[in-house]
Image (cartoon, rainbow, N blue to C red; front, side):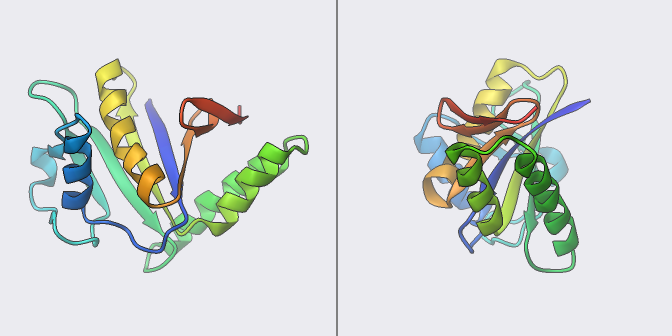
Length: 159
């Protein structure tokens, strides 16, 4: 079973992987494409899925982007609608309203998928990638089974 951590992004532009990797490298994580994704271009925002490696001999993780446009926009819309329903079912609160507003403004979703036996450094490397989207693309992070996070603070639990 996989564990998924997402960033719901409100900016219109998906960055190129090379831009993301340059930022994470400056912040202590030398991310790169894994062998499965060797043909994914680093200099264009037109990527959809990438195997990400961060250290020799360590387990990679997958990162994909779901957009509110293109031939797979229905997948994006379905995922956002699912989260809107789940969050709407929670008791009213300012935090719930903040998350609902963010979900309604989301233009794309970045999702990191980790294997069930992933180690802490794998999550840290993936977290650095998602931090880029929080810092530069209006990202709000959601961790499966936990909820929505603002930095190190759990904003809204979502069982």
